[in-house]
Length: 96
Image (tube, rainbow, N blue to C red; front, side, top):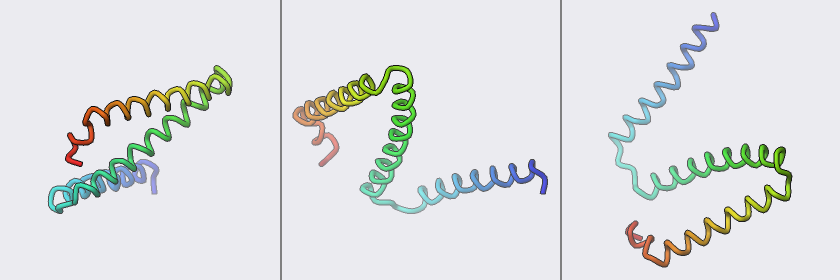
């Protein structure tokens, strides 16, 4: 089978999966907690992949110590911002 035909069939398969998923999402009533769980998992995977790539580059350019300080500093800032938002009623805006 020619390579161009293989590429076309794989593209068709990927496109069909997208269309079938959109159709299922339109026709089937999916609970909000399930949608939230799937989206949280997907965003976690994307953030993880990005972080791994950025940490690798950071270690090469700035060293392990600077990378660790930056990574931990970012985690502390994120946690403090999350706490501040929670205390100001962010959870009540989600209906939880």
